[in-house]
Length: 220
Image (tube, rainbow, N blue to C red; front, side):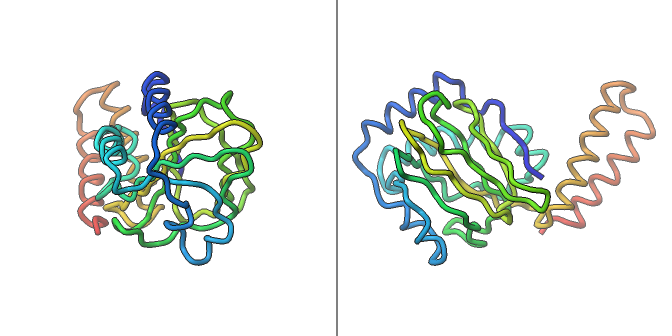
């Protein structure tokens, strides 16, 4: 299951972050964080994780991610980790790849991309996700994010002109299996809709009991 964060940051907040990134000098090759099998197709830069700017921006954004209602309801985050700020300019992108199962900060159950640049600032640069039903490409408004399974093959099409700034990272979920996360999300959505219509009644209590007991059973 994939879902959008609309928005995570306001356009003004995203623009401010882009401005600070443009002035930054602490850049490293994106290949440093790629698995051995993906280094040959990764052509971008990333902000040095040890830099003061990286630490400051992560400290400001990570709590927003963790507290977002959809992240809580659909991702069940144990940790949000390995965040990277990455620009792509003309000719840069990231070819077809799969994310490593384990990052420095933990297991990668879900990946996310937060678009910091508005689509008008660059040409190309779409995030493309592959599923058995076909491929889908995304160029979201500034401040919007997309959360998707780390098990999906994906790529970033080369930027043709302009600058594309994004924040990427990963979520280790308390619920390892994707189908279990989806079922829990549907149960929670249903019980909340029921509560808004009829309040706390017998049916709501039964659904809540099943939801809570499945959480206990599946929490890894």
